Amino acid sequence: MPARWIKLKAGVTLLKISVSTFRNPVTSIKALSLLLRQRKRLHGNKRDHKIVRSGNRYYWSIYTPGFPSAGFNAMIQQEIRRAFVPDTEDILLQTLILSISSRCHYRCEHCYEGNNIEKWEHLSIADLSKVLREAIKLGIPHIQIGGGEPMLRFRDLVRLLELGKDHMDFWLSTSGYGLTREKAWDMKVAGLTGANISLDHWEAEIHNRFRKHPEAYRWVMEAVENCKAVGIIPNLTLCVTHGMAREEQLMRYMTLARNMEIPFVRFLETRKAGNYAGKDVLLTSQEQSTVVDFYLKMNGSAKYRSYPIIQYPGYHQRKVGCYGAGNRYIHIDSKGNYHSCPFCRGAVGNIREMDLQEGISLLREKGCQLFKTNPHA
Ligand code: SF4
Image 1: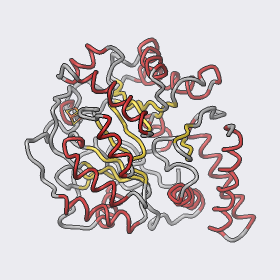
Image 2: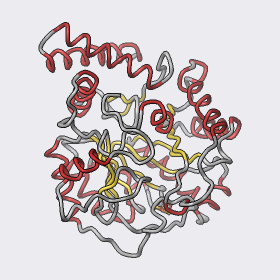
Image 3: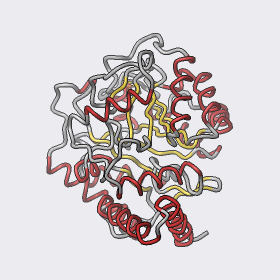
């Protein structure tokens, strides 16, 4: 189906949701146009040229449940309410980032969990299932499962997918290690939508050095092919370091991703967390401008239609404030601690002491330490 028809169908769905939320046609149209204006401001480009199809659903973003689906409708309803109503206290959390493993075979230069990588697990499958049941009850439509390396806890991972698959979209954040065809198939059947696979450089040797593992690049390539073969959407995640924040480096990375037929690439900016705590890793304003210009050009121009859609949370954070700290998402680490996000540490409690709703409320009160949180943006 051509992209314009998908957009038209999605637009009609948005209008229906707005009407059923406000039960007043004038308010519904006002709320919807406010939301669309905000969206345009947020993305910075006049038009989106790209949509990804997986099975019978369509995706604009790795952070949004596929269209059409109940999760998509729930998320849109919350966004319409946020844009228009002053009280956002009871608004649903969009994404839960859940670390299920403390273990990892790699020792990456930038690892935000560098101080927490261990040889054993802290959370039992019962702990993890309890949190997931709470997330289902609250209606959270989107879960990112990470670690450590979540593939090292494969059986529990599959059990969690099976538990939540009728209620939410699952994305896996992985180095790709151990993601064989058989495991990809098991995860697809259990309900996995997409995989965020980390690739730090277009050149194998540099990626392996960064990850301190000789097979790291090979595993990325295998994981991507295995995900594509079974219908899991692959997204390459790049940690943009000083060395990568240059037009020619980013273009080589994107060309590799396009040649691998990857639909999404995510740019994450380096943060002073974990192994990078106290180091000179933050992008300079000149480097940030280079990445922003590149992002806007690649996503907004029809000339680059064949390249993957870039997701760049740092761009949005600077424009409209942080989406973490309970605004749209929170992070639960592999010990069960509630955090604003994977990079801003300072737990407000643990899943064994307080339920998910309480953790979310405390993080909302605390807010983000680095950026403002604006629930209406
Ligand atoms: S960044 Fe990920 S893959 Fe690398 S050491 Fe940390 S948990 Fe492992």
